[in-house]
Length: 432
Ligand SMILES: *Cc1c(COP(=O)(O)O)cnc(C)c1O
Image (cartoon, rainbow, N blue to C red; front, side, top):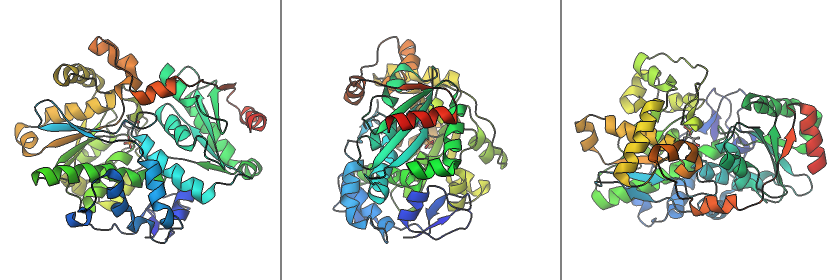
């Protein structure tokens, strides 16, 4: 399999696409063509790892990682991703939150770490991943690269602007992870990462790289859980389930759409966004109008210019086609809050604000559409990560899952820095 840029450059191998992250012409890497599968191809594949093995064989063709595929998948899918029926049984929850940091980004970060450490890890001259984060991404990336030989991570997060539990997830790792609490906003963290990457001498000395969400190595593995969940439902019932996916930068939803394009038994796909309406407006008005993001309760989806739209348009087409192939609904904060309460009363357990956009979307469907399919909601994070939002709404504490208990019991350490390149360089010199 070869990979090309959405803007034409390439083709390159999987290894080159993963190492480069973004294509030389500024576009995003996509497979030159998607493989097609028949249900029978998965006949002897039951576990998620076995499904992933069938799915990934073609994607790893021509990669130096081909011989490591089993090990890469074992490192990525080392936790369960169950599908749980919800009250009444006509819908269910795809629980993507059992990884080390209790959010679906653990899958993409884990796979990227497994690939990148094999491709570029060097104990003499470690590769240094720089990651600016406003919360979820930094934790998943730090956890994935934690204690991997030949790899280092520098996490930059804005002081006082992440929740206490989020901060702990960013600061509780081994010696190869340096957590910097930046006296500034998320934009300052991002600016620092860009400035560091642009400094040639510094960049060569530390072998800087990024684990950006647009890396194809974070996108591809996410198709696996849609393949696995849809096959299980299809085998049991003979019907294709529909999926509702909470959407921000469109990575998770794109992986679901790719699985459907590859022939997996997936029915309708509906995107649920928060009040950042860029995608919903595009399908409604046919005009692509990216804009600054607005802050919402589903903060990991606060994206006003989803970069994966470039991949989606390349894969399916422009708005006229997209509106026929996809559903979309934008859910504002008031409805997110109401849904968290309603879901708790109906299901008997809490859901996170991101997952609530999906659940509200199913409730808003007309009766015919809702009844025509079994709807599987992608539950993107554990509610205990967003306890300051969820607990006041449901009036009780959300029990901590084992993975978060483990993380919160680790000692935390962070270095306070000013938002300057000099401060960043000094702490790297001191700690690495
Ligand atoms: C990142 C994230 C999302 C959005 O996923 P995209 O791939 O950016 O669309 C949704 N929910 C949670 C909890 C996230 O961390």
